[in-house]
Image (cartoon, rainbow over all chains, first blue to last red):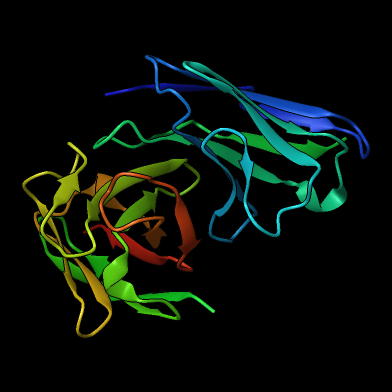
Length: 107
Length: 122
């Protein structure tokens, strides 16, 4: 199975900061990489699909990039409502794996 | 509006069985693959099982293979997960999720149900 290494596991940043989270796959997954946001006590929400495509209705401050084994998720200007845990997810069929998650806090 | 509503969770003893259901609405259920994802308390997300739109193809995580069975009734817009030989490590919130396509090929998950807690304990 493909392993996903997500980093950092936690991150503290100030409102307005640029935030970057990375995900590395144990083998080439082309662009089969999605990003989710999970707020405390809530179900996850899809933000980015196929590495760089913004889901409808998601603010443009969120973006994704990468291909092959190395992927990046960026929040261009952190807002208070972005406090959540973020997960990457690969789908090299039929196996699906998630990264360990990045807990984002406001400094 | 697309909605997924899980039911059937609760407390069960180790070795016992439980059947989860997910009622779908707001989309043509048979046109989409469906998946179960779980989250142990305080932990990350773990894919459990998936089924194609027509029900003919299923996949399971190694951790549940041989113990869990995924199924769907497209006439009732319902997804199910039969869980047998339950273990303490199966304790988690179980989410029902809709996939992007029917064929388990293009695989992102949206929307998610609100989740249902399964606790395996004596």
